[in-house]
Length: 186
Image (cartoon, rainbow, N blue to C red):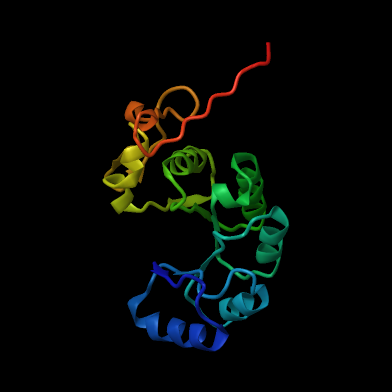
């Protein structure tokens, strides 16, 4: 899988896809800026390498355009950007109706990651759950006490109520933390 961060226009993206052909990569991720759907569709038509997009889309209507234009062969969803679990499920259902797989994006925090893992486990067309391994020993563990376990390359949702997560107790007493409490007016 080759992450291109949406930094390319169509001509160089076509050259990159061609140059990567001998390596049989699983996909080109975000090769062209996420809102350039016509260019992405043109790229998809001219390469045999699958295109994964678009973690940055923020509405079901944009995902529908991506799917209808066949601008991606793997639909990448970020729960934090698309509108949450319910919206992500609707997007995944649209993709499934068009016989497209989905993958859920990870980079927006441990709670979104845990929610994505839980959702991925329920989607018949989910093929991957993206994970940034460096976060497992870095800032994710500074916020939560538990992360979905990864065993032999497979991730499972946490057990327990909700997402099965607990915020670290020390999070509330850190000197850089701002804790706000609200209550019912009485």
